[in-house]
Length: 192
Image (cartoon, rainbow, N blue to C red; front, top):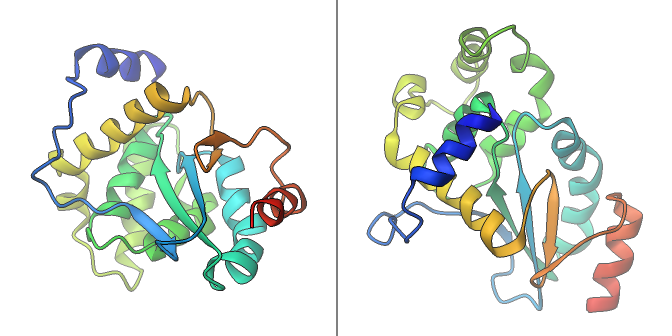
């Protein structure tokens, strides 16, 4: 899989090819907040799922809902399954995070399989049985969404030298401590 993404890096034109498209970032919180947090993540990454399960709820309660920070979830898919799941997360193109959180909370359900076809079937079954009313095939085959996600990955690598997930960027600086709520809370409180 890594070879595929390297080839994509080489052959894609990295100019802003989405200037005319209205693909919304997945963002929560006060857009005018003093602290901007960017999370680069891959939907097949277990550490990213742990972030959504263990860190995000407290972060939301103490900082996001209180209007103290703005958080943006950016794509950095590490494999084809993560790319397909990211297409699902962006398919409604509404900027909301509900589908993204749903996919992370249910990661153990759809990530199983020995190949991409099995994983896609699990993902499709999960989405069909959800309340999101998405056309799975249209989402998975949407080239514009795919390009948007890969462009976000390329930008993350170029701008912040992202190599692993999750990687947090707080006000344009990498968060380099162990990722747990206590460490993140300490840094955020200092910045506020």
